[in-house]
Image (cartoon, rainbow, N blue to C red; front, side, top):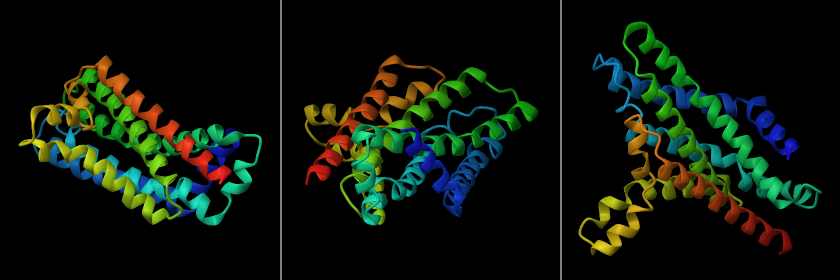
Length: 234
């Protein structure tokens, strides 16, 4: 599995792909930070880490999904890996960890923004770190979903489009159920990935939210393993 993680990391930064991804995240998050913190001349970061940063994560993970399982299937390099001693679980987990490391590296730009608040304002350390934990959990959940979708296709573009569509749907589906029966609204409330983030944005580390995001991560990684195993035997 270590070899898979190393391969993911090196392949991303050996070319301009990884650097471009981080640049996109830094640019989009800088725009949001300017609008919700600098422009308002405030030290409050709850709005910055709110719904809009989810769209930055969504775009980042969608692009990142192009280098996940779909690309390996397209180039047929997955056949060598799937028949190696590492096994399917190690292969998928390695892909997840490698992609997650890239996400974490991009996320570190937020510490630069917080440094500006420390210099020119009065930062709320508790709120910042609770939002960091929340975003890292959300990132893990999104990447696991992206890996699952990537396991369904051999097209990198299809993986990116599918990831974007599913993650975007998981953010906005609740708006389209406002006039549905209450039981439908209740069910979809658990699907909306943003609903569980509110406590983090208010500086609270919520145990149910932590369990939810970890559960989503584990479930979709499990599904990705099952789909990859199915392809292996086919």
